[in-house]
Structure formats: C-alpha cells, structure tokens
Image (cartoon, rainbow, N blue to C red; front, side, top):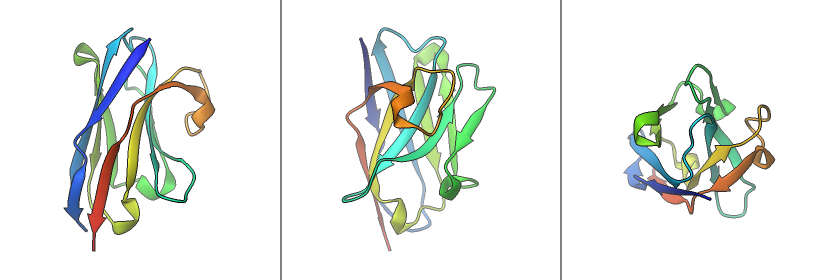
Length: 124
C-alpha cells in the first residue's frame, strides 16, 4: 500500500500562487512516476502534470503549461506542484497519484494510488 497525502490548498486571488505538496508513506514511490490531477464540480477529472522518477521528464496539461511546475524530492518521498498566475478556472480539488505504468501520463487509468485531494479555490 501507498498512502498519499496532499496539502497546501486554500483560497487565493486570481493571479496569485500556491504550492501543493504530496507526501507518500507506506510503500515508497521509489522508481515510479507521479502525477497531479484536478476535478471541478460537475466536470471530469483533468490531467494537470506528471513527472518521472528521475525528474528527467515532465508533462503538463495544455492549460497549465507555463504556469504550473511539477517537481519532486525523492529523499523526502514528496512531490510538489507550484501553481502561478492562478485563474478562477483553476478552482478544483487537486489529487496526486502514483503513475504505475510506463505510458499514459495524462490518463487516470495509468495511476494506481490516489490521495484524498486538496481544495484550491481561486477568487476573481
């Protein structure tokens, strides 16, 4: 089992920044990629970003490119999502997940363990 706990969400004004963290415990995330997704009320889960184990490769959803940055600290078993220039449409619950397959970064089915989510609300 892998437990993933997100933190860092909150309320921020448009144009502001937040940094989300995802701490893993139990079986580690050594050797695996990690990803972030988000889900707004009434909408499907949306891919935000993913990062490989070595952090040699990162992937982003189209609307996040240039504003969000995913990173990881393998010594701390933690993955981060730095979000800048936030917009009201970024409002959602943000989830981190373990990327368990060597493909399909934007696809939820490629992830096997999920956190409980952290709420991000961006006011206009």
